[in-house]
Image (cartoon, rainbow, N blue to C red; front, side, top):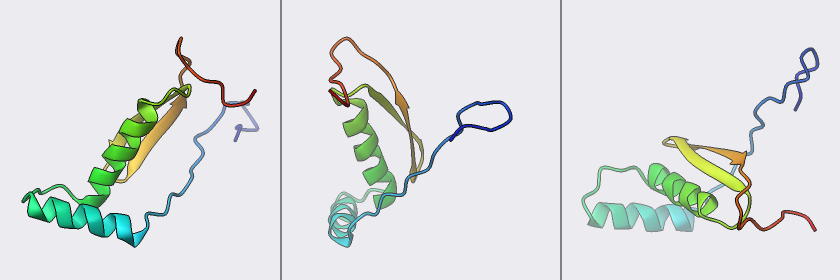
Length: 83
């Protein structure tokens, strides 16, 4: 959303809901591996890696255990969002 005074875009927040089945899967596997990583942090890393490695013009960076910053990033191989 733009800042009305300066017409500068501000961050938009979108909430993702993680299904308990995925959370349980990550919890069990991290426990089995004796990992100290939280399931939320592991899922956040996975989602950031998927988005950042996609053919879409986005970059994704994990900025916290439960936070990813997604930005527009045109690459030579990028697929358009809209045709």
